[in-house]
Length: 110
Image (cartoon, rainbow, N blue to C red; front, side, top):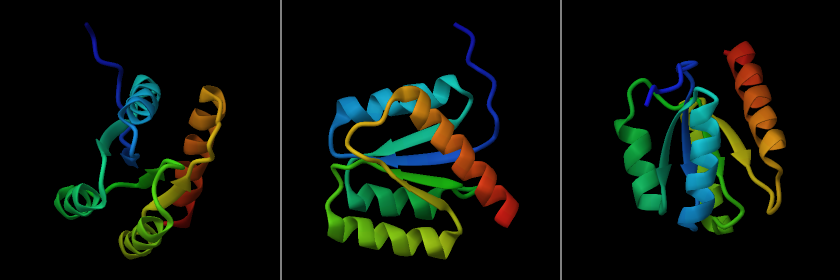
């Protein structure tokens, strides 16, 4: 199987439910994004600290508790990554479009 070409953007997804996280990872990977996933705040922090070059976007599933969202907002500000907080129901085409728009806006701001 041939891997899709990468567009160079690095994304970290954090969700509590494996099936949701994996579905979103596959959608973005098929569109050329380099995507990593984590299922808890400790893994999230570790991934952010270890990743070089740094992530350009953090995606938080609606399943992430508010106190953890707050901690991740601080990390996004510190690292310069964009932050996409997903709603409960988002259609796949809308999801990919929103990610693309956020990354484009984040790149322009840099």
